[in-house]
Length: 387
Image 1 (cartoon, rainbow, N blue to C red):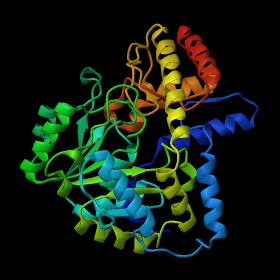
Image 2 (image 1 turned 135 degrees about the vertical axis):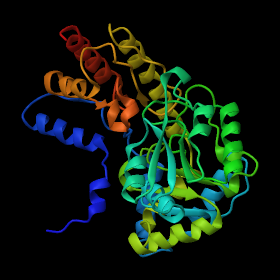
Image 3 (image 1 turned 45 degrees about the vertical axis):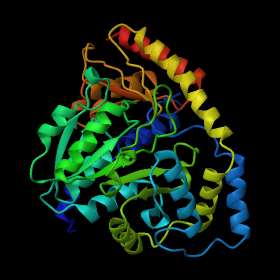
Image 4 (image 1 turned 180 degrees about the vertical axis):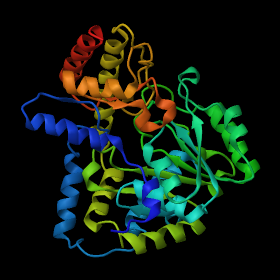
């Protein structure tokens, strides 16, 4: 059977592969603590679920515009205008089934084969996967613990060449939980304007912050024409299975991203979009309570990991991941991932799942109960003591 050569360049999201392995162990009777998957373990708030039920009863079961229902696009435009301090309208918004299509469609709309794209490494693995698949050159921007898992702007500047057309930023970041602060974001904005780049600003964790504040590239003068803001509902509102995300971008790019939606998905589910309207306009108590609980869990897992000899863990400022340094242990990150799962029933992800610069680190998602986190910490401590 003939398979396109480009498929060999398409990567994956390893969290789902580890989840399959963990589920297979559970099927054999093993007890596994899941710290591998980046999914809130909370139910979608009741008001959002009720809005979806009402939308079904009201007939929102048919095709809608490829760019999204007008009411949701208007609601998103109002939300972004208020939270980012920049005037955007519904024509700047495209709604997609999940936020991942915005990564795909933005690159397809703005980048040619052979163009260079700078992306964070370690970072969300789909960035590098899509860049490589479409025949562009993936240029890694190292994200280092020494900078607080922020961005070294001087190093970023050194990576920009005449072939650089596109850049990806992620703050708060997966897998590190790092934030880009005001000073560095202002410097990045200057580089973007100087070199006339398009930036995909992945802000999917913008509402999950514990210290500091969320700084959006879109908020800086002149960035409206250079920024594609990616956000969605999966993380903030525990709506992972609903598949609802969006991009806010210049109208010229929005036109082509909507055209890509027409050619691929037709549209995002209409009743889901009505639930998203309620998510943004309705009470935010559940979302705020979820972040407070994540903060509590973060403190437990950071303290617990730092108490294990050979592991050090920086406190993440956002998202719901820790990225501890395990380079002092006598195994590679991948070997540790396999060891903790196979021998101790703790599902984690090797840092190299997020790029080559993730070696020496492991990612833990603390989207699990404090009880299970403590259980996992005890197992990890036992495992480390026997290395």
